[in-house]
Image 1: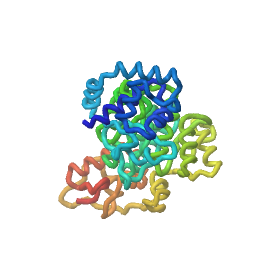
Image 2: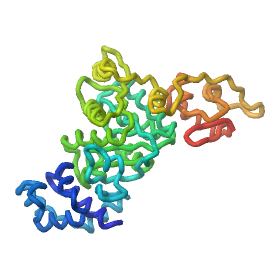
Image 3: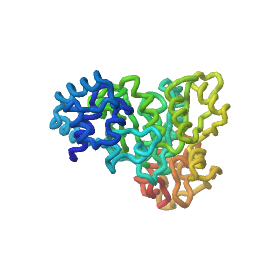
Image 4: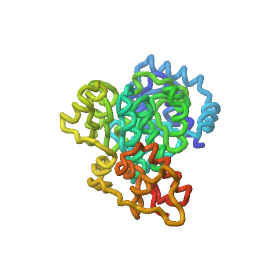
Amino acid sequence: MARSDLLVAALASLPNAGPARLGRLLREREPAEAWARVAEGAVPVEVAPAEVRREWRAHAATVDLGRLGAALRELGAVATSWHDERHPPALADDIDPAPVALWRGSLPDAAQPCVAVVGTRRASAIGREFARELGAGLSSAGVVVVSGLALGVDGAAHRGALLVGGAGPLAIVGSGLDVVYPQAHHELWHEVAERGGLLTEAPLGGEAAPWRFPARNRLIAAFAQLVVVVESRAAGGSLLTVEQAARRGIDVMAVPGSVRNAAAAGTNQLLADGCAPVRDADDVLVALGLGSSAIRVGRDRAAPPSRSVPDGTEHVWAAIDDGPTSVDEIVARTGRPVLEVAAAVELLVESGHLVTDGARVRPA
């Protein structure tokens, strides 16, 4: 582990040090110099007021870099500043850059399309199911689903992305990498870290303080080429992400909902304001320039005469083309839930009727 990782993690742990102050501290200083200034009480006055500088110096005296390094290694975590070539370009080049970042897993490379899927924590059952299907469809097409791992829409989108084994999702969280929030997503948190990426500005041990979430939302927008709001009330965190997207010139799409559903008040207003509607993952892929606007209808297909398809998979088998087909395309053709389709696809692969082709499947 590079010593710079330890120092960045230490700088992230400074009290009363949000992105703006850390940015001023690191603007012309590498982490080693910045930490030395903090420890010596020699931070310039333009970086922080006197009481904060004194607080930082006292805190620095308590930091055990050896223990901090052990914690990073145990998590398999990386800590970078914007001086580091490993720092995510999406954050370093942003209009409101993140001076430090800590993450686990893998981050999307510059060539991978990323879509933010956001919405209310108090989502309806229909909203959660749509978010799962959208996450699955995007992931199967190689699109990284970016969200905040919150209850409701966020968690559902991440689960959908993990379901199909396509592009791993990216979760931007408002607590330390070792502080699972919300606790209800304990298993999901670790699965995202293992199969995708988990990123934060918060220090190790950092609790999910309310002020961190608006800052977190700007990072979600920074990674995205497109933002999709699945359900949102008239006010809420997902609309803050929409504001951040607007600042960056990023298009926003919204899922239509019933006018009687309070959870869709915000999304319906976005549509009234001119945002494009999302009916399925295909709409999003078209907006990204990655798909066709026409949903193709799969032709009937007979099973190989020597062996019939497994019971309960006939509808999926009939919906598959000669070439590679995604789970999302099968869902659109069959009208079946994504979980049911994914299970049937797995059975058809195990039985030898289908083979995987990247994030898609095709007849063997």
